Image (cartoon, rainbow, N blue to C red; front, top):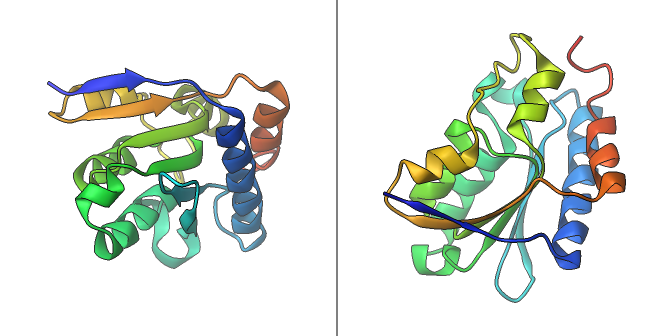
Length: 168
């Protein structure tokens, strides 16, 4: 079985999570859900960014999956194994699966899937799973590093602010 390699969130990671929060705010300003992701290589170079595209394709157009599909076309698995995918919220089952198949080696997220489920409730636009990315990775055969949720309260409030009034 796969193994989640627990990692800690660093100051560098917090900076990238704030960048994801800004992208998520941009996504919401365009009528999309406030989710976003960023792919960063081992040299801390941002390779790709992606906002949610709900208005384009509905609930399946998650930022993490869209970014991962783009990354898989552009970079070989060996490169992606050294990359980190940052996202404001913990990747869902679909997004974690895409990350797994693309061979991205590390995930860092700001707020948990459980907290997202509490926010969205039974909103039909975001039928959130009650399943962590760690559980998904653990059911696979690859080892992936995971860091999150963020403990930085200022960052958490910033991420959650983009969702105020969104799901009611």
